[in-house]
Length: 466
Image 1 (cartoon, helix red, strand yellow):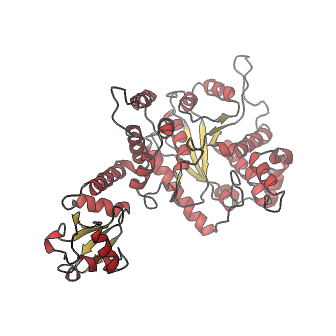
Image 2 (cartoon, one colour):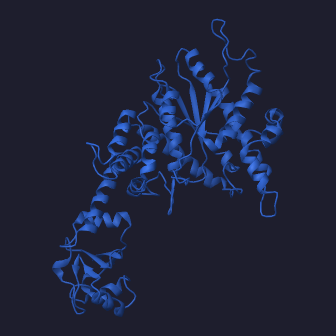
Image 3 (cartoon, rainbow, N blue to C red):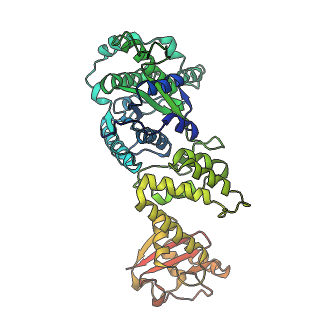
């Protein structure tokens, strides 16, 4: 793990507070004191990611960003893929038990997420790769009896039952409609707690970070370390110069979940999760999702999701006022947010692609005189805003436009096309079709092969002549 072991560059806790990335912290005062007590030498921090899919999503990005802030401050960071805990499923924030994935799928997902974490930490310019671990490495060698003797013995059922993730499910299971909680899910907090303890012993990992819904699982780990690892060092954390300090063996930090002012998760859209894998969701679609951020949320997300200096964020916030001298028009703050996050996730190439498609789509929507440009055709195709079809040139050129719209499925019948022609709603490459008998001319194809058909304002199709 390539990390500069020199003096720390800045107070990472203060940065997290300032950027609204610090929700709760076990013994926050003690952690601040611990960092100073170690003469500002680096500490090791980890964040876990469950391989429930083969890609992380926008909600997971907060964990990566918090890890990046620790790394930028000079600390050592670990990304932990839950190859073992993924076999069980985290009940936190869930009203019902997750369906279990098979081992082959989990192994595939774990490999994909590990690669993503490495790439994203590089994008964050942290000065070295994050160390990626898989908790299956230590759990696959452990028997159930070993776990009961070495871990379960130190867990207290009362404390486990008091976790919000457990209480909410138990209450839901009291009526006939609720399913309660299985022993498998109930045990999850111990598995995650053991992860922390294992990393504490093997990697000197003192801090675990996670979303606010992970508080119960994180404190299960700090409690397990206190019970088991204080035996390794009976004296516990050392006091300096006789001055008593409220220090802990290990610390837990949570950050807020990525939710908008309306209470809805911002990491999802109507079409599903905002995936970080460009093959599952294009950079353009991520850019557009961020561009739709409400004014009430954009400043908060600029703080949380970008590495912009806080003075720059403050300047952007001030310029949102239409009366401000630097006001650049509506949605300028959203454009900065969309550009920064898209570049962080997909690199400059991904951002350039998103901007090119956005520009091409704007042209295709606004230009009503003259054929679209090649960029506009490419934008429509890549964005998915217009389906496409390939048709032999011999079946298009010289044939009625009415026939073409039915052939490619843009309208169900010739009579439907004729009605739309009378209503002034049919266009070929932005040319209004005025007569039913009009045919498609050879010269109309852009670059000799593309036609843009429109039946109304939103119903469009790209036809490629072959």
